[in-house]
Length: 302
Length: 332
Image 1 (cartoon, rainbow over the protein chains, first blue to last red):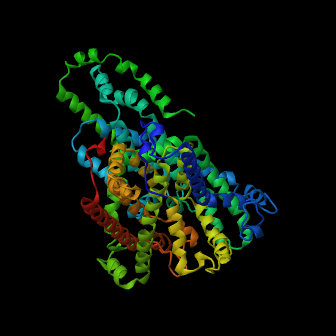
Image 2: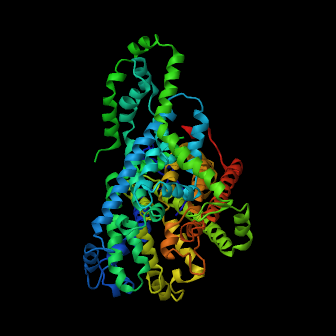
Image 3: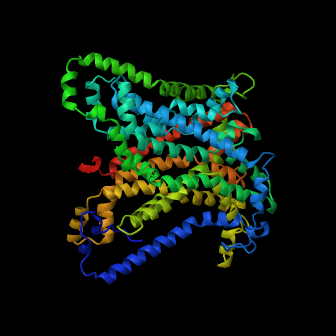
């Protein structure tokens, strides 16, 4: 791969003026080469995903032995076993738990982070600067630094092995990243809108409700999607707080399989892995624009 | 699927009552003294910040303080904490070889994964930063592993791919390299996790792409006229113009790498093996706290991690003065 962001990529540059001495044929050749290398890189990159999907339809003795992405003897036994139950519970039970936790986390983050972000972005109050500095510092705070006292707190409250330790913190705007994301977004909105509303007699709360909140929708959607996917994938806190199969989420159900050695465990394990990734895949296909904008916006709009 | 543009348009029409007549509003607002409005704003701000404040006190500052206190105690969650002074720290630093295993493994992991991940992210960003058909598709496809990679499901795939007789073992044997299963061997096991980490290069890639889009094309034109070839243009235009974004990615990915947990837990069945070769700091902290119930010891580990990350972040920002270039229009 050469490192030459070509002169021609300026959006305004007319296509013809690419480079001296290149005819249309050369340009086609370059374009074909570009697509070929991009697709080759993608095939290598996404091989593990393809491997997983194909292996989930292979009989256990083929999973490792057959390198081809096509099963010799396709079977849905793994799926059949998963749907007949994992560790004594129906597979829907684990999906239900995961969905509950993720939905709770989404509601919490959208609500609490937008309230905090509006206050930090638009309202004047003493200590705003240092407190916002604190928000940024906590983005970098490792989860492990506070994991143990948080666990002790929830344990004393009798909330271990419930979903509360996974949901409640989201209602307290603990995910500083999203506060920051929304603050950055609100700063791009024209101030004239809320000033006009204020002069018309709207208080800060009404400005938030009627002006900021509707305009904030793209950032809210980004927050909701990222929170959903991150919570759906989250392993550490679910591992720490949930210790009974009746409360297990999908990642914890999957983790049961790592202690079962031997080939017989491969079928249901791979089938459940595929099922675990389906919601993420769907979210990704539906909302990729928001995801990519959120990922880019977090870094650059400062 | 509605696009952000239509959403924004819908949002804008929602506020028309407020925005319809700014000039009228401005006159009406003159009646209200500015200071009382400010005071009202302050009250409203604290009202809106109530959940955030509660979270910061109860779930961040409080726990950080409690964990500092616990780090000087012997505490197993069931009996009251027992003050032992610095003994957790001295035990950690002088008498616990597994602690140093964890530090070494984590340091090796971070030093390997961060540069590989950022190099991949930059390479793919440069590839995608051209006007080509299907650009959006490629961008999404290259980003996808970022979302999948943190899951237990993909960690299980990695375990299978790198096990004895798995795909990697097969392919390497075919070309005459006999490594056996990587996850079973102390000298290779960490590399499976490095590859899993580097596989998720999508997030820094998207940030690099956004950075590349902001570099003005005339800089490349001017450099080309001055006779700079593609490689020269990369080092003299792209790299300096991109350096603020590079710093941002470097800090974020370094902190991120220190916190990797799921992959190591799944690949080593929660044990950090073989031979402690995948015993990430976070994994050892988890074992100490939640398997051995040595909460005081684990808290001491947490504080050392916190201080080390804080210091590392300061060092990275400190070196930035030497190599990060801020152009006038950077904050456009």
